[in-house]
Length: 504
Image (cartoon, rainbow, N blue to C red; front, side):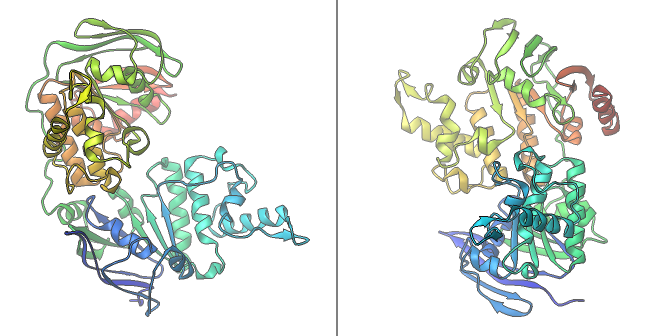
């Protein structure tokens, strides 16, 4: 076996009285993809931040090519050849692909002061070619590229440096979160090029199928500790779930315990906006209606129209048989809707504010004396009770929301919805970017809402999620409703066929 390219040993980090990392060790070998898995809050992010020089450990022994090194800040990590690629794109949209590739370096010059654009574009094309990327024009404005191609430009940017040959360790944190299947395949080809060059890749993802496709080794973390490191070959998904959660998840999707009610809670008749049209369905008390469709089919736009974020051109929507006038997002909560958006960080949460502030935000009038003076004790009690009801892992409701893991941030949104049991709950990709254990918790919360009689509209790109939770599924086609089908007896192949046929 080859000697490790990078090793970190006995890494520990404590925040106050809360240990985030406990005696963690990891070896990255050249020419291998090493997957790092664990539930949200397992310690993965802390370990990565120590390697990146963003977090100072209480103790850690780091060796590069068998030489001890110290990483005090991100510049140290860069100089040592460590490159970090996160799911957030962070590109300069006004610049070209070539400019983004070399954005951290001086551009080549002519006559000492003029940018040598021809050389810049040629250098960018050479870097892309070295990574097997030949379909992107370096002169193209990056805003015109797909998210997947923008991610490839980020990787190319990480590949260059003051000493390009020095870049030897790549840390990729959820790089496929916003990518299509074809874009993910391109990324995997680039990872193959990096492996062939002898680089080590630390790959963090919640998508288990990706690990089995590209991984060589896997390390599983739980509660701040490394539980086990093993070869991918001979490992099963069941093994990883057991290691991550400390339990067997025999039933990924909790069974329905209460039958769907007979009363129609929400009725939509020919709903149209500038984005979608021809939407019509009934949603009964306690029913979970899925919304399926290919990317761009209009899933999110349907939920946005119901919550009042998109202006309705036609608005024949009835709640409990009574017509609803056009809503704004604020008035929608008062009308009995609750909404968990797709982009929790951009659309759902105030990351710099406390958990308490985020849970109670739409309910401040109800928590005020006479609707004017906020009852602080009631606000604290409510946020604390709701946090406990969703099994939120935090130091308390005064903790800043940005400090939470992705799964716990999502639970804050569910806690917000539970303050006043909604008549209709709108969920847009409710488990995107959360780990397998947190997914199970969220599925249980969805079942709890359903058991209380809340009607649920669940938009998701996860076919298993739709089939495992939903009673019926509405299929979108080119921003129109194509069909509504019973979920019972439907297979993933059947549903995918419906989505493709609807878009043909």
